[in-house]
Length: 156
Length: 156
Image (cartoon, rainbow over all chains, first blue to last red; front, side):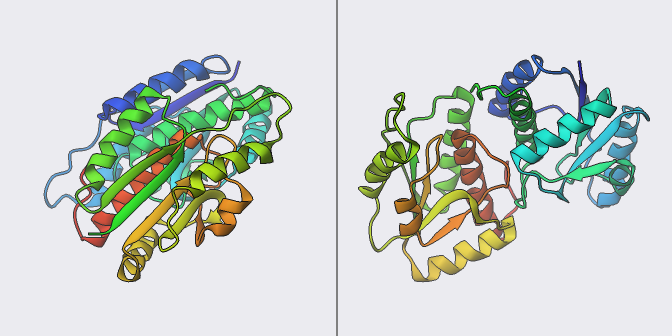
């Protein structure tokens, strides 16, 4: 069974998005061994530059990356798949990789180091989403991808 | 104050997405008089063709459209703005229109009649989203657009 690791920054603060994550994580378990990793956010202090925050969070993220994993970072600048393309892509990746790792940054995004280290960058939308909304959307799209791969009806 | 009408098909069945809608609708009220209209979904009966369902829902939607309103239909095939472009676009529209109407279809989308009658089509993502997720994302982006227009910090 494919292993999927999802690394995010900070715990989910919105109660309804947290419920949504739980909802989709449970459904994802039917198709992949799913691991959800929350790393500590870097403190946003007055005068601390953005890259300083991103680099600190990048260090925490990097501790959870395994070199043999295929790493997909989420960023607005990345490739915009449609749902069928994403499903096909995941299906192809699963032929050569046991483990896929998705990385979602905090409110400020991901460090250049993490983006550079990733095998690819995936964009959910041209729109700027909250990082918590991105997580929910990612989980929903992964679940949708597996229903497409398995030729199943999409169960809401 | 700008009036925004959001016409959707069916009530929201997911409890967490319903909570999210309430959350953002309340926040949107600071910037626009917001009206949320749920029209009845057409029954999906065995053998009933998709266009039959969409046309039936289109008739219910059309009853809520006002000819002087500027109508924006949501569809994956539409224009993909980024959040700043969307904010600028809404700001410009508000100079010439008192009322903007957004239309989100049901699980099967919108009828050709409704898409043709709309002034423009807006795409949230290349990905296929559930219609309930689309509503939440639309509300979040409208809220985000107003914080951009007003030059305010984005309040989560």
